[in-house]
Length: 170
Image (cartoon, rainbow, N blue to C red; front, top):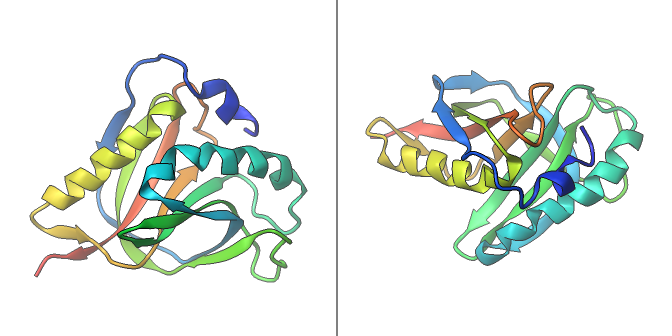
């Protein structure tokens, strides 16, 4: 699974598909990863974090196998923080260079994307737009948005799950 982002970036493939699934309660999870602050104009630099993460991730002790995570958090008008992360066992130490990002139990809108990873930002934008137009739920302020890269993922046409925390509109 590692090293895939370089080969996928810039390839002209079919547009990414986005499917909204039912909202669900997502259990807490302990994530840690390479993190960086971005302005909104610097979003295109996120793959650089993944390239560095791809080299470190195989050596992380105490990680739960099977998934990698992208985490967007600390959003504000100027930008946000983003981490390429792994799930850590409860008693595992946080590796040097990693930031711990605990994800609380929360209600999330769940989306699945399928298509080239180079088009993922478009899918994320469409998911956020769908929630902004939703009459019943709004994006929750504060909790992180999480991308789940599991065994269904590949860079050309794989599936990524997006978890966006939501609250009921009043």
